[in-house]
Amino acid sequence: MILTEVDRLPDAALPLDACKAHLRLGVGFSDDGGQDGLVLAYLRAAIQAIEARIGKALIARSFRLRLSQWRDPCGEVLPLAPVTAVTSVVLIGRDGGETVLEPASWRLEPDMHAPRLCPAGWMLPTVPTGGAVEVVFEAGFGAHWRDVPPDLAQAVMLLAAEYHENRHASDAPSGRGVMPFGVMALIERWRLVRTTSARRR
Image (tube, rainbow, N blue to C red; front, side, top):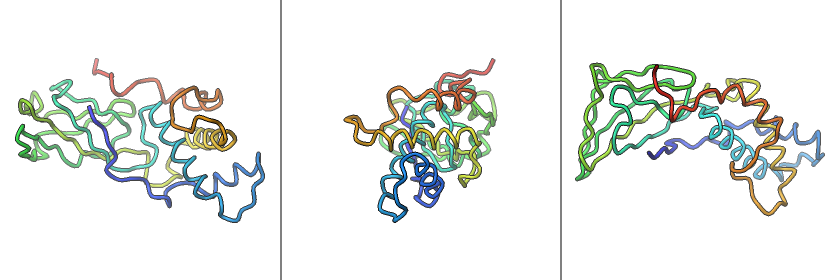
């Protein structure tokens, strides 16, 4: 499985001013714009780390999922939630030839933890031997930061502040390692189901 972002979050979508205000409470740097680049980097790292932990996209954007075979031809669980739309499903042959599936051949089954791409009939179309299938979908709570649930938005601020406070540490923020307890407490309710392993009961 390969999951990639089709659209990178633009700087304008990130809560730069809110994060700078949050950081000033603890570290008191002057607001001359000189640290905007660093703050944006901390925000991106914090968002990516939290999204990876909870299997949710915070701000809406497009993603591409590539599979060598369906994990469940009766309904493929998508690795991120909430999914608002599946925009394309393409079968790719061994020779690289592409077949775009008609939207009538599949449907999206929304779910806050485990959205599924389901067949219109009994099974999803067969993936060519030696080929792949690519699914492009839209995922996220909304197009704007204000659409992010308050507990997740606060978790991002706390984690970005943690990265800022420890910016001189030898290991740069990467989303790996142990998260602060306060961040884990805020995101815990969103980790109830792992989307990559969920199955319909």
